[in-house]
Image (cartoon, rainbow, N blue to C red; front, side, top):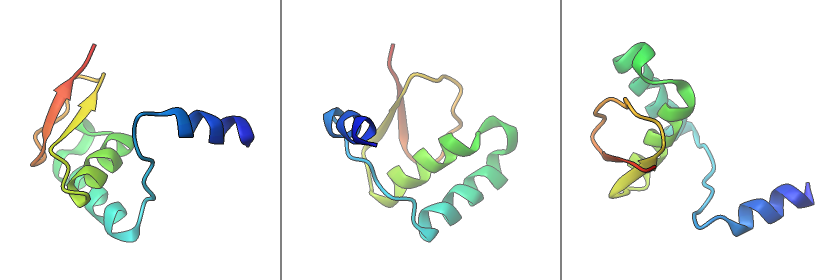
Length: 74
């Protein structure tokens, strides 16, 4: 567990909890986009929308439009 905590504390980002509100938003996104949006990606987008983030950075291509800017990084 210490190794995981150390890894997470070194990330240049925050780790946010998945609340009922975020889970509900992720379910709505999945229902709207179906197989184009996997559950982990829906949770990321729902969290970003909940936090009113400017954008999401990802290494995965093909995310559908969900009301937030998604930038692909290499």
